Image 1 (cartoon, rainbow, N blue to C red):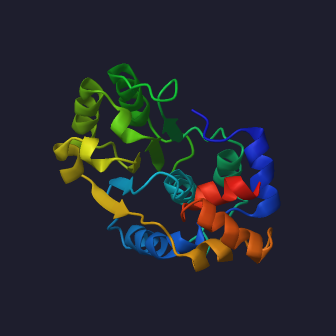
Image 2 (tube, rainbow, N blue to C red):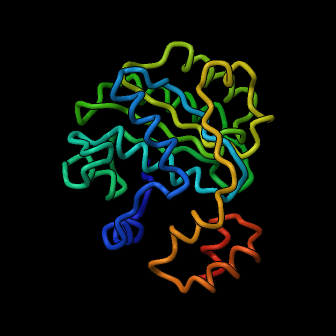
Length: 220
């Protein structure tokens, strides 16, 4: 299942996407855990809506799939990276509801399980992003729980969660939580300063109440 379309691919190539400035420390910790063979197979990326959690999941997925990572980043030029950027990496599955605000059903989770049991087509890791994971209905959540209890080899689950209280406690207990808070104004300015006037960024931060994705939407 595709993560990005051709339009996003072009944007990435032209703008050099990376983790957001306020995500760097968490990214470094997780990358170190991975390089030390200590990364948990299931990560719950939680925090308020609008702090770029899904963006973090996609960037971390690219790193996990890259065949030649460089200094803790996806190299951007190996075959796996080109497939990721093109939105058609066979070992990357991105799951969400079929329509906004709808539930993720058990058949979707069963499909994930069947797909992830197969051998990696690129000979590396397999990654599954679920966003928003709290949209799974009860049957789907229980099906995912069974997968997490006996995860396929070399497989990582990145669960993007806006309301962690809606997640099954048993899924939470089998995952590592990564919390994202609202970033500082300086972090948002650092992120956008090359593309926008700083005064405009500050005004947008005030209007958006500090939510970075809202800031970006206002400026565009």
